[in-house]
Image 1: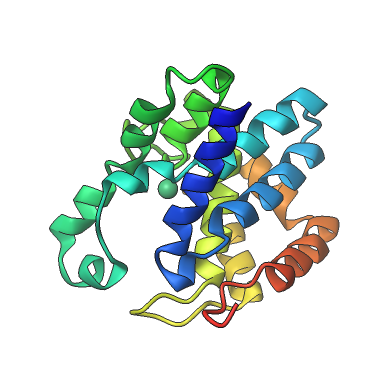
Image 2 (image 1 turned 30 degrees about the horizontal axis):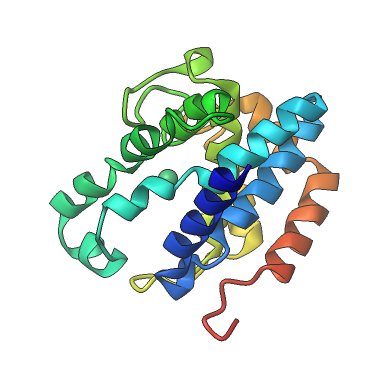
Length: 198
Ligand SMILES: [Fe+2]
């Protein structure tokens, strides 16, 4: 559908506004579809996760901001927290995306109820969103930011293990940490680099 293709392009543009987030949504979609497959999703469910992941941060188009400002000014951090809702407002009437809205809306909820925007907890968070949370965090942490270097893959996997049950759904974290997925994440991270030279 042409409008959805246009939205993918818009989301990729949002990522490309900062060198260090280039390809972010594409990589999150690769991690998330692997996870959905490992969790036994149907082909239709995997497609839904792919689309949700490609569009999960499109609402950032409405938040003109840089991580440099974010690091220095906590109130700007609050502004960026509006992006899931802006994404929902942008996408909710697009035919074909209805089932992607819950994942886009809730991809920053934490399993223990400390996330945003609605502080949902446990299984009240849609499973698609719990998958995106792991995939999104992984890619964010292995990518450098202006105010910190990239974490190593091993360090991030350690974090995902440690935060299982608090930040992440234990079921999803366990699936991500499985040996097969570990090999795959290494290959995705290598293929789609955030390197500014890329
Ligand atoms: Fe996000």
